[in-house]
Image 1 (cartoon, rainbow, N blue to C red):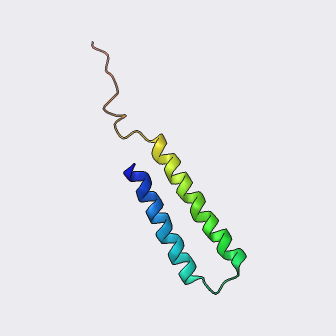
Image 2 (cartoon, one colour; image 1 turned 120 degrees about the vertical axis):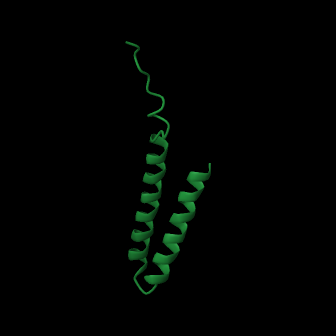
Length: 64
């Protein structure tokens, strides 16, 4: 699924930048930051799954 892959790619990029910028920080700090990016990626995927972009067009109308 392309949107899910896009989320994974962006999270991977953000994690790489985070490590590059904060490479001099302790490992515990890096682990915590990377964990937050992982959590954000999971939440983004969950929200994407819960969202139905065509839901407005699926509403039915009652004839008068």
